[in-house]
Length: 238
Image (cartoon, rainbow, N blue to C red; front, side, top):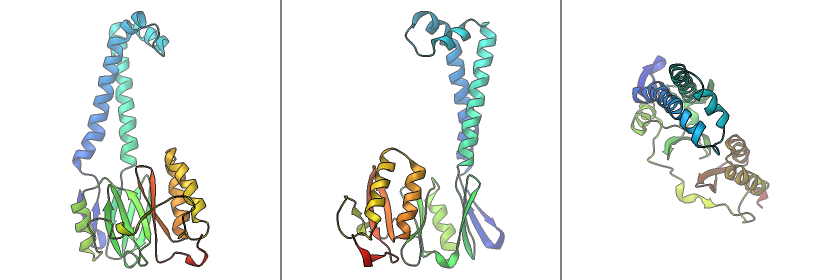
């Protein structure tokens, strides 16, 4: 969904289909799971003695059929609503204005002066903004329509590229190889462990530390690839 805003802003967010899936699909799915649980609970409680949480199945099986069914469906719907609320909160909204670019997710706002953004593009499902020295200003999982994003940025004079213009400059990270600023190899090693263990917050934090050294990182199937930006501290290469 793209909408105009104040100061000739264009806002891009998930459309009606995404909202329908969140607020319609997940509660319905939860209701279906609840109905199935209530239906099979008597059979599981009596026939499958090895099943985990068998006591829960027995407790539901001992309830009157109508009570068990209504209760299980209600719990399933509430669980679906909770998932939908979490998904809605995690949606990314991008607003491109005459003098700035704003990105909002989960109540947090990132803002960049329009003149600081040299280019924008989608790398897979991630929205990336590049700065004047080819450094990444931000990399955010977007799941937004590329055509609408391109139109929003181009409307305010931000170049939009079809993919990463520096993709050929990336090198596969292998511990100990030369070419990195001092300290970057250690940070990449720590980040590799975080990526392998799906510690997204830690990996994101370490990406920021690497950016301060002028190292841009991208991931591909839990492998790290890096390049230097114009801010790289190359005087102390490792």
